[in-house]
Length: 360
Image (cartoon, rainbow, N blue to C red):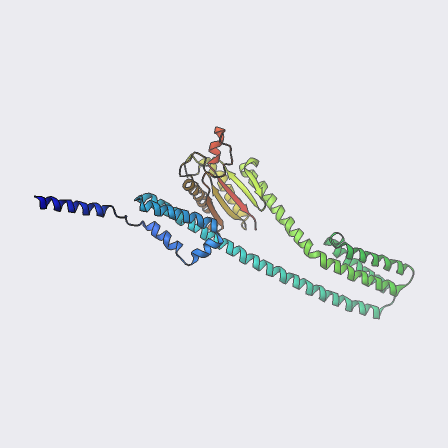
């Protein structure tokens, strides 16, 4: 009898020991760890550290849940971690593309400036040759008029790029020489008048060459400002002026009260506005689309809920034709409560997504 009891006790202890061991690691967590252990992981962490940190936090939560035996929770955190890793990966690719695009644009501008410089030198040489020919062919008053007219042509070009404002010294020197040419012509001193006109022409050409880069930059800046103003106005037409603002380069559209409390499905009443935002994103096809999700203060699992809200908004925009490569999503949880929840009517407003369009 004692041996039988001892045997049963040993079997029971063995069964208990087997039950207390760690459960099998969820496939989602294994996949997430493989992603974070890939060769591109370090590069993604360098380029998109914020999104990668969120992925790291979710990985740690998944591991903790798995070790605590909470398999369902571990799978949820691991799945969210995979999504966040994809977001970090998209951010890294986007920023890498932006850097390469900026480098290409810089190189193109430098080449353009070199071409303009070469063209200006070529034009200057050609005009000098023309001037020499004119001096040889004609010493008459008609020749002087031609040379003065050439100076006037250069004057119009320089004035067209605001050289009188940005290159005042060179422009004023050219003006003085042109007046001198007119005075000498009136006195009948044709050769001296022609020489003064030639000097004026060269000074105007120099003022033009110096003023044009700044003028072109100003024009580009004005065009960008005009596009952003138009985008801001169109966004106001979708959700109203109280739900649109700018932060330097971006126009931010607040889709407030877009979800039930703790819900992650976009309310039908907000779908028309989101559809029009998608149309706006397609119209400004060079804009980067960033979606941030938020919850009201009393929401549990706020981060998870806010990320799913981002995903819902992203998926809807993709269904409207917006390229998924342009979209970045970030769940913010209950951070940055835009509306004061001391007023009960404001609480639902914080169940929102904010969609930023950043022109390039």
